[in-house]
Image 1 (cartoon, rainbow, N blue to C red):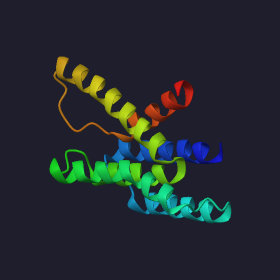
Image 2: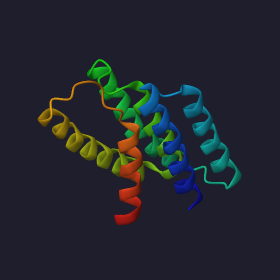
Image 3: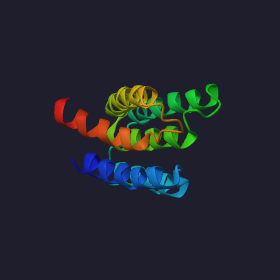
Length: 136
């Protein structure tokens, strides 16, 4: 349960920054990722195939950032990458998928009410993680 609690705390901190400044501090993401590596080393959860698998969802997000010319920000991809180090690849993928669905629903409401501007993704990632924790 420790990795999931740390993940929720990490996303809550980043969500507040994402809403307020519309940017994500890379230093916080790096500290979070470094903490995940230390946690894995300390508890001897160092299976390289698991570590590589945990990086796949974040890597796909980074690829989407590149392909969409940063409509999906690099910070979002780095966040999913670091979250995968803590929670594992499948959980990070489910969380990211739920975040995409929730932000899409919000986007439809923004279109209906003609609200323009960038949508911060990390709050939806946080809410997506909560949904996945409850229902998966």
